[in-house]
Amino acid sequence: MKHIKIKIKVLEHARDLPVPKYMSEEASGMDLYAAVDKDTELKPGEISLIPTGICMSILPGYEAQVRPRSGLSLKHGLSIVNSPGTIDSDYRGEIGIILINLGKEPFVIKRGLRIAQLILQEVIRGDISVVAELAETQRNSGGFGHTGH
Image 1 (cartoon, rainbow, N blue to C red):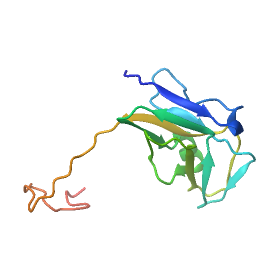
Image 2: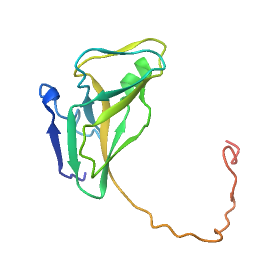
Image 3: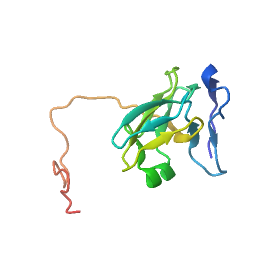
Image 4: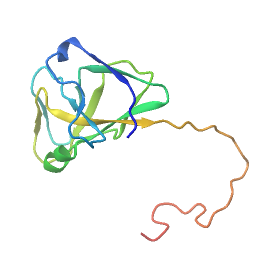
């Protein structure tokens, strides 16, 4: 398993919360915690930006992805609107999670709730070439459902 160094800055309003951490030996994602100052209710269909109270620095050539927690998704319909959210290596602001309640009941975000997972990924950048034609394939321009599944 590859390891890279990441630097976390804990903001003043989150000094009492845990820093992101892996919850098991083989976990690929670190849990992120809600740094809300009071209980925040998300009604069904409602979207809210939830602060985490942390900023981070990761090496160039990497990104951090923010993904939903499966238990919250299954039990309460809680998800992330821009899933996976992308945190670029040059971003230094507070990490915020754009949560949506896709469930049927209101859901309360409490301070310290584990609200998302943070996954580190290598980044591959493409070099764009504009061409007049593309090589043909068997599928060619067949779109959604084209393969019959």
